[in-house]
Image (cartoon, rainbow, N blue to C red; front, side):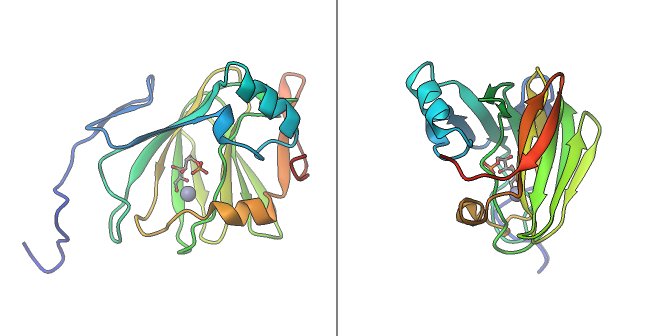
Length: 193
Ligand code: S6P
Ligand code: ZN
């Protein structure tokens, strides 16, 4: 081993299923249900009713065994189930990388997008299978399923980037994404209430 190698991670061959959202070998699996995302949607009463009802899964994140550690490049598969709360499409919580480092997303299935916000400007990138979305350092990012099927993407990011969810709670994301007929529209951000 040279001075460049950082134990204990060995080279890995990871098979992933774009159809099922699984990684082999697998790391941690995170499931976010409606009851886990208080304050995420503009219509908090409607979210609470859904959480008190059948509490549907909003999204899952299946990680590979690569740890979130300096020098590593962890990967994960996010699957956002189709659906909306009072017309606002299912989405991830969204976060900022407190150690400002970039990230790439690769679209695998379904129709979605990445909403990015730097505190002033908002950017929206449409995602579909085969599309790479690049998130530069300093941009908070949230993924949204704007279709009728599960939207799935692969994320690859620096292991020391970290996840600051409080920044998004404090600053918002600039826009909200609503169903608009068979398509979607980006509306000005409003606090949950
Ligand atoms: C990690 C990367 C994704 C998200 C995942 C869930 O840097 O951006 O793996 O963690 O899409 O989103 P969130 O905002 O709940 O972490
Ligand atoms: Zn990220």
